[in-house]
Length: 161
Image 1 (cartoon, helix red, strand yellow):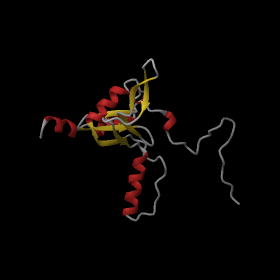
Image 2: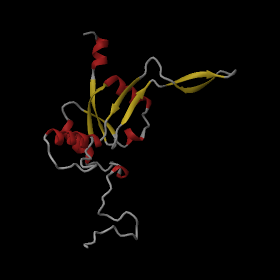
Image 3: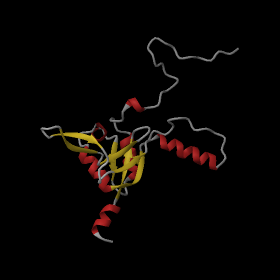
Image 4: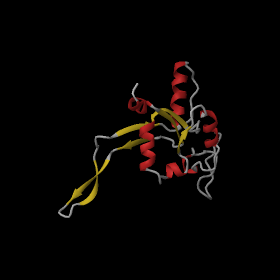
């Protein structure tokens, strides 16, 4: 295998703490001259070096659990947001990830460790460490139906008839 082919075949594992994940895209925006003065402006257009990869979020755990329940013909349901551990996306092209990190180095996703690279062989401890970190965004946590959401308003209670 040539060095270039090996570089393109290299993959990494990326953890995601977003509920629905996101799409990593590179090579989508180009700078082109506009007007008589030739001022460079950004244009959203796929270039020759365009690449993308779908990063799954923690809701994907729920989908996987549902598939297992269907396969085992279980009658129990899986509540939404049951597993909020980061989803580990294996097989992300390393070249795409490195380029995306370079283009988005100031992104809040990287600064707050919402997207993070997992060292090979250290997936379990990395997921646990990140899940327990204080940087986990509270806005993405599932709503607890037993807690009062609006101050002064009591949650609904069942009445026995």
